[in-house]
Image (tube, rainbow, N blue to C red; front, side, top):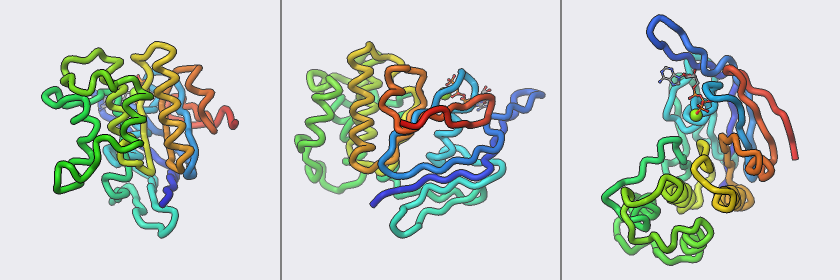
Length: 232
Ligand SMILES: Nc1ncnc2c1ncn2[C@@H]1O[C@H](COP(=O)(O)OP(=O)(O)OP(=O)(O)O)[C@@H](O)[C@H]1O
Ligand SMILES: [Mg+2]
């Protein structure tokens, strides 16, 4: 299956004391399957809010967000009732990475697989896709380390592997290369690019100029407004 994301007039404000912060000021957007979409813009411009709205982790005040299966159109959502794809079809690399400290790297990566299945060995830990994620993201040698024994960059690459392990049709990654050196940053973008090439919609908030080269479209947030700045 493949997915489609559509936002129409998406508005979201936050209250902060007496102030009303307009994180999204009427965003219109359509994203098709098989693309990597970069989302740039200054700190505080609304990138994370936009990703969280797509994920269904934040609601809209006004407007529509649809994250739908292109094939049968299920999963249509509005600001009233944000429906989503099945949980294992949409994955997020959150800005706060959220690894479980008591689990090993391998257990963290395979957690989505474990959650969806009854038997602990129903999902082969060594299938080609899983092995290639461990290799390409350079976390193979950390397989048995615990979440709290990793550098921030390592934790981030584990979070990327965890997001990709079940071949999701939508991947929302919030600054997934911020803690990486140049080589590991490229590895992160190559893994995300591979997911898009397999047909996923991949949306990546990023300031990384190197990373933007992997994108099919570069979108820019500015004070809650979205525009397109490049198409490759
Ligand atoms: N829970 C919240 N309560 C109040 N204001 C918020 C909340 N979350 C975000 N904001 C505000 O909404 C605006 C957009 O925030 P958002 O996190 O989407 O920005 P961002 O572009 O992701 O920034 P960064 O690059 O720093 O991650 C900012 O002004 C921020 O202060
Ligand atoms: Mg952010």
